Amino acid sequence: MDFVKKQWRALAFGLACAAGLGLGIWQWMAASDVVAAMQTANSVGTRLKSQATAKMYNHNWIDTKRKEVAESENRFSDSLRDAQQRQSFMTDFRTGQRVERAPLVEGVLPKADRTQPKIEFRRRYKEEFALLFTRLKGDRPLSDNEVTAEVERAGLEEQARLAQMEDPWTLKLDTAGNVVGEGQTWDRARTVWADPEARAQYRRARNLLMYIDAGALAPHPLTDKTEPPHDVEIWQAQMSLWILQDVVEALARVNDERVRRLTDAGTPEQAWVAYMPIKRLVYLGIDRHLGFAGFSNSPPRDGYFYPSFTGRENTDKYFVVPVHLTLVVEAEQIPVVLDSLVRISFFTPVRIKYTHVRADWRQKPYVYGSARLVEVNIDLEGYYLHSVFGKWMPPEVKEQLTNPIGKDLLPDAQGGGSPGMIRGGGGRLGG
Image 1 (cartoon, rainbow, N blue to C red):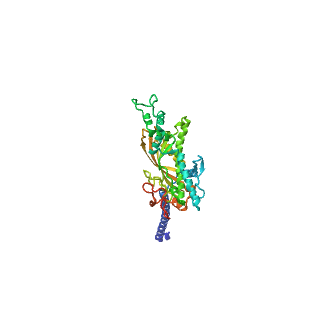
Image 2 (tube, one colour):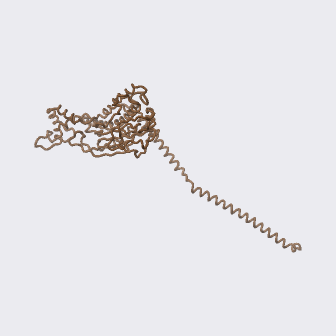
Image 3 (cartoon, helix red, strand yellow):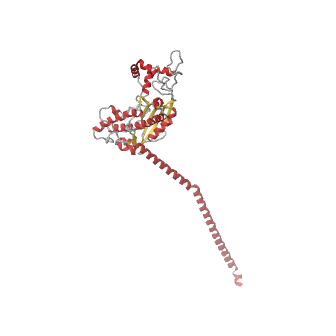
């Protein structure tokens, strides 16, 4: 006890130190828990912040989008296969059968080493171009000189006989079916029949399914040259012929279907232009996108605008060819015409404009019949696959038709120029 009394100061100091040390340990331990808790809170906050700023992944949405992309790719592949099938085959105008597409003369494309195949190609080209008119069963109306000659040939006796014929345009006769004479009610049909020109144009029309304007179809200029055509000219002529053949086949099918219906209905005598859906081919042109500025018909009245809203350009998969078409058709048949064009090849209509056509009541020079008519202007883009046509392209043409068309290579404002114009030299002069 004496020891305690003597050492109480030291003992008090020791206890105080021990207490302080214990409190410090406790505080340190408590502080460690706080830090750990704070670290945990910070970690949770960091994770939440990271999740808040990171992209949210919805696996169902991802799977749906993947399926949509796959379906789109499949549709694109199907479209390419369909286009390849259509463009690999064509209609032979002589037999009416579908045949595999090939140049008119074997070995002439992409390059002919001998002169004879080039000359033979020109001869065959002229023959095939003439068949475009045969397939359409079309021609122009009679010229004034032809009308005069026809009237003179017919003579007064023939004129009198024709005046008694039944009206060919579904116009009403007078009630007795007789020729309207002096003092009787005016009758349009009788007035028409009294016109020698109208009678001559009628006889012409009975042999046509479609009128074709002079210059509506234009051959490649190689037909007018005496020297053998060179490789680029042959390519342009062959490719433009294929395009013309496809468009002509599409138009002919529309009128063929009307002929079939009239025949099935027991009225085959109506199978002529007055009863056809497509009355007249005014213009068919191919813009200068076949390599080295070839080839175009005379410029259309309403020039093609480039580039179109599709934004499509030449690629290593296909090359783009604008096509212009002006027709006189029955107003209700415009969708049928467009459908036939789209089905025949890989065409996209990019602009359609139409105006009302008021037929001459005397039905001359065009015997149009009595249906409501419009003149329709159609701009098309054709997409032609390199996998089909590339093997026939001369190398310099293939290089052009694989690359986008630059601003310096655009056609002029009317989309025309000299038909099939060729410019020498190695420069890139047109698409």
